[in-house]
Length: 430
Image (cartoon, rainbow, N blue to C red; front, side, top):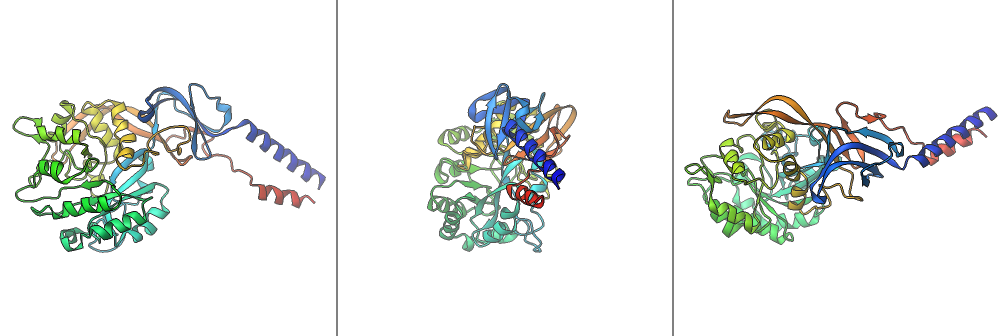
């Protein structure tokens, strides 16, 4: 009995000494930190404690970390934010993105790409949002925010043409009730030469306290004027997604005759209209993106429009989208900014997308893999590049949730002995 008691005291003493010596849960050593919000673009160390960023410094003693991550030769960025995804997966037949089989379960596709926050882009409406919340949002490790569809049922195929179910007041009421999760309003897929859906979505955004509206312009014949959309219908801070799409039923940004951005597009940007990639299945074409990037017209935010179809076609995932913009001429810093602090600002959650001391510890560690890679769009046009972004490790809320190559030492943190368990062990010795 005395021997057992002695061993327990020795164990508890050792644990106490280790805890006193190790001030941080995780120390990330030697990575090139890119944090656009804080103007950091340099080799730095970073420490995490209690789920938050505790220190960003040139040299942090690795002995202070319970886990140490060797990030030498890699890039340490805020956790990526994808503001156009479809996460309301389910089993309802013919429901498509609303509780249907075209949505995805976020945790299976986010962390392996360094993504820690997604915004579901209108899969649910005011009537179906509570189901989406309990079914997906509340049980995901990924932070899942939402744009509420102006259609009460949400993104349910042909039903989205139902103007009678576009209720601005009810949409705003539900958005305000869940203001910590609902970050905007979405209009998508409406087919018709009619401004009513756009105006009701904007009305809902205004009634909900000025939250942004994301517009997927659907299609019409003849196409609705995007100049009129930008100047007469949208407000500063509203988001035009699929900005590099080129479909016959929609007007697009680049004039194919001059191969230049249409002049009113730059005026819209000055007015505060946000241009989001929203890559999707057929909503991105190099014939739009390449001349725009060449002209210096970069997207405000890079996003995927991630769903079952797009992820298995040209889009693939967030890092592939980011790699395409690197290959087209954007700098790594600008690509990271368009995937972290910019989207955080667009959804009015600027506490996200940065590595400020005290901020939640959502972090991506990225590697630039060298080789020969082909990056194609849905038309079959291919751009080749010798560099591709790859996620090595992802931290969400201070915990390692994805580690490709076992960078962390130890790979798994030692289990902490709770006070109650220590007391129980002590009582067993008497």
